[in-house]
Amino acid sequence: MKRTYILLLLILTASLVSAQQQGIVKLRGTRLTYPLVNKWIEEFNKVYPNIRVSIAPQAPADSIDFTIAAYALTEKDYEGNREGVAIARYIQLPVANSQRPDLASVQAKGITEKDIQALFFSPATPDLFGSSQASSPITRYTREKPACAAKTFAKHYGNDAATLQGTGVKGDDKDLANAVKDDVYGISFNNLGFIYDVNTRKITEGLAVIPIDLNENGKIDKQENIYSTVDEVIRYAEKTGDSKLVTERVNFIFSKSSANAAAGIFLNWVLTKGQRYNHALGFLELESKTLTEQKAIANTVF
Image: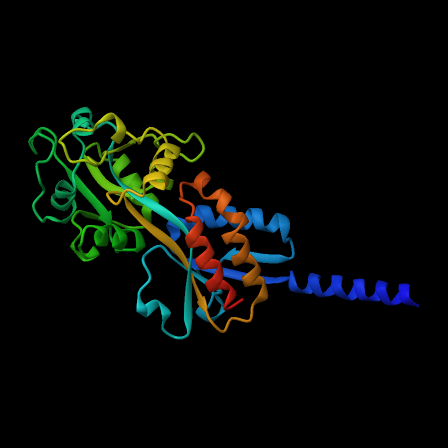
């Protein structure tokens, strides 16, 4: 009799666990994060095959479990009984076409914060690189509609995204990268996942990083030359936390009253097992202290 009771208890427990590990989770939001989120989904499904997680940009708003926001959250994001949890970080860098005639001198000199202000936020196209606009002009590109990355880039330099200068490019950040590739004089900014080929880890063909003169001494010193691979940039950023780099969090925004247990399982997995995939897709991991804080926030809901 005792054995039968134990067996029934085990069956009931297994059934309960199985029920808790089923469900549907829907996400949508900032598209620059989709390569990483898709990787998370792929790996998560290997462990939880009965939880269907998908990016669903066309789904009704009230069916979305997580809205992805790649900017610093504001009070507005918490309205309507909402909560937010950081799940990764990303970096943006200035970029040029790899065939630019004066590229060697541009990369030797680098670019300062003052230069960036003039290049991306001044109505008049500046002459920054010692070449005249006649011999080596600058064609500036930005997103047609300021999205998360543009807002983050502008805010880092104390500006509003509406003041970004340049030809507006339709589409997303990948399209912005392609605009620079297609114009030998093109210059813009982008995140690591599109500046670098995440398979070879080297700079994407057709693009070149405009290095930041971190100590602003008019040249790129050896210790500032950190751009040969995506991993080199990530290591430097995570080790130093250098404020000269444009770095921001990626967040999941969700309802505090969510009853979707499957969403909680997925979020917990992202904050634990999922972090190991961030570097591979050009994203930074969250610091240990930050991860602990974000897990505590998630646990208040799920």
